[in-house]
Length: 216
Length: 75
Image (tube, rainbow over the protein chains, first blue to last red):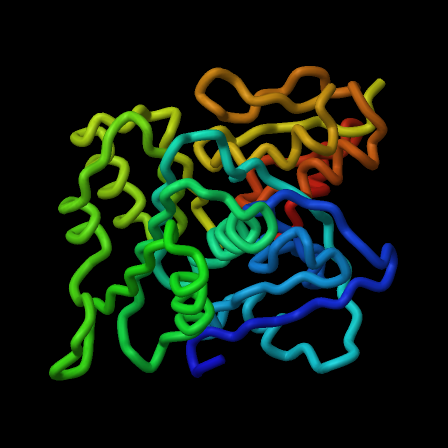
């Protein structure tokens, strides 16, 4: 997608399909007795393949393994795993930074495109630079088809004269009118996770309605 | 005698519950959503090991019960 984020599609061979819940993850065997976990970006309706998003800015083992895969290579993974899944709150707020968007994308597309969910749904997604942007068109298209979905992309290091939101996602969330009817789903860096949890306490969102995943 | 000894590193657990999904008679989450060991011999050795291998933070360590050799994680 760009120099920082790559999106990978894994086509399933054996078994040829998978059932999972939006928000779940897979555990990939990366060789040498090591495994790495990656959230699923695609919605459950796409049951013949799995999309992942990988931050390739670094030299971690998992990232190196995935970055070096060539079309047609076979991989082994365990799935579906995890319980970062949607609950039944009346309104939904999704908060992501970077690749943390991955499980939230699966949830949002599942809610809107498959289930035609009518609840109020907000997505705040923080990236650093404009060059890192990806999937923003897909989310913007959703806002056109589904008026109950609101999307805000927030750049922490925007270019000059950036017309849209800049700063930190938490600054934006602080300004929202939230309350006990909201469910909050967070996936991103540790600072945003802790800050968002704190904001939710101040806004009377119960702890049990704040859901988070510490990796993506 | 169980084939493996299981050690849960509670500080590492993030409550993803993948271990519970694979071997629920061996692993459960407590009221703080942290993994606890229920029965070290509650499932097949393969599932006990798989439950540990599925953990995204390597919060479960597996040792050979006889030799005490560390089986998982390998790194």
